[in-house]
Amino acid sequence: MNQINPLQIGGLLVVVILFLFFKISGVQSEILEADKHFKKIEKLALDVSALKNVYADKKRIQKSLQKIFSNRKLQSANLKIENKNKKIKVSSESMDSIALNYLMGKILNDSYNITTLKIKQLSKEKASFEMEIKW
Image (tube, rainbow, N blue to C red; front, side, top):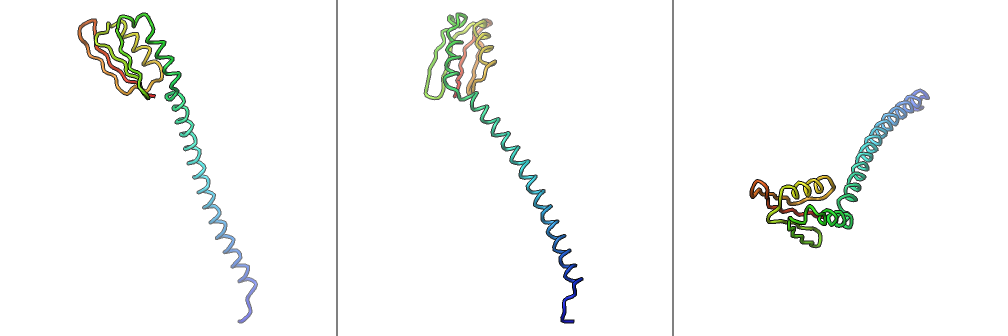
């Protein structure tokens, strides 16, 4: 009885190998799950980076806004433009509907971070307007 039976050693090795096999398969599933999570976060980071490039380009925003504001259709609107450090504030006390439609069409069809937009109808053809764009 003091001797170890070779069958017992073989059985122990089989049990250890099975145990390690199950542990490795568990670790593999955790690695696959972590890989999926990493790819999801990487995609989100690329999306955030692309949005930052679109919305944080101060020079592009200023250039395109200057082009919009210098249009002849907005000459009669008497736009008050206040250019601050990280935002631009545009307002008009009395703006005709043609100028307002032109401005809204141009502003809303481009990528701007509009923080405030107030339009109040003064009459059938006139409206007051206030907008703040941040970069």
